[in-house]
View (spheres, rainbow over the protein chains, first blue to last red):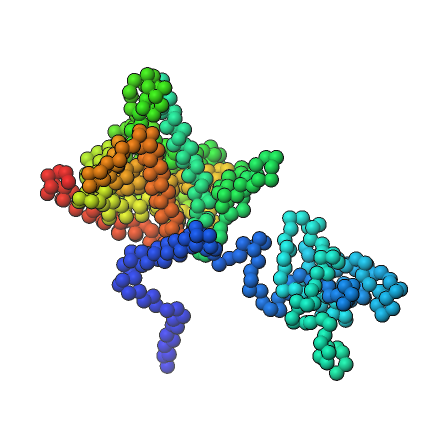
Length: 192
Length: 381
């Protein structure tokens, strides 16, 4: 028995109308589109507005970061302004890029938290912004902000961030995780 | 004699400076215009710092052309193992030099009277006047075609002597494409030559200074709209730019005929291409856009149709004509860049079919219709 196997067509036949096949009018249309965009954007630049969709990074950062974007690290503080960090080195241990360096100090006057970081440094030239340090922290001492202001640098030695840069957290303005927690609010990891 | 020499020297310096500035600036204009057309910002980082200060001249990134050139100079000068070192070495110059020479016959301004411009030199010049054009040749257009034809030899030499299959293919493509479009270009301009009765570019521009049909400027594009379109198409193809950049097709041939060229030798090819954009702009301006002419303007000032006249000093007229020419050239260059960033590339067979089966008959028809109309009008419009 003879079976015919029709060849399957995997593509669409080009179906150009006569107007499109004339080529010139469609070229004119294409040139009109591109030149309209050009003139519109140029007019915006000339009148002092921005005529581009792209961001002029690093001078300008985009405004539409995702709410949960992992940006630069911040160290949270106790109400007296000292870092909440207890220098347990958990973040430095879990860090896959090995960019966190902590030097612990001892403060006998603070009975509840005698161990504190003297030096807490992150090398942003190698940080991969994975957020594992935030997850590993038992004290909620390290968080990540949404933005990465001032990240790029012309010199890799300028990309180390120390305690003073990261202790800029202002709990009053943090609506996502207010500190100290409101009375009666359930704190993650706290008593039920 | 000395006067003529010094004026010619000034013209040559002006023309060379203009072409090289155009070539440098156009690399930036091309990137910036493409960026603005596609909602991006574009090249704007290169700057010149004034020495001993912290003042950085950014100027929207205008200095990117200089940065590119400097980068080209500092690249490694790679030499392929080729059997024809001489041809390999001279090919970029064979492409680059004729491109500069073409401009010698293009008038970039009206008549210059140095005595009136600088009264202190009036005695020295004895009232001599000079048309602003490096070489006043009767065979202007022929010179243009002769020299632009020379670049074909350079591209084919480069493709042949590189000892590389991609280069050879690119050189072959460049040769056949440029010869095809050269023909179309010549036939298109024939209509214009019939119309203006001269092949001296200065005379052609002077013929375009009047008014046509009562209110339109008597520019070539008014008389020969189809010719202008065909000329621009053929000129872009001649310049091997998208949509006709088959000789360099990056996706197929790496860089075509200059695959094996590095550093400033490759830079010369690129520079020649960008200067040729300006040359095409200058030729189109000269032949079809009235050259340095503004409507209602003559060598003494403006004469508006209502009978009102504005007298201008000779210096103001000269500067206006120079600026008008530059602005027109820049607009045509910008239009070429617009085309380059809007249209997709042809297939190779389509390029040649387009030239021989579409453009050539159209340009012949244009020539025949022009000749018939001129004949019915008794030889002149």
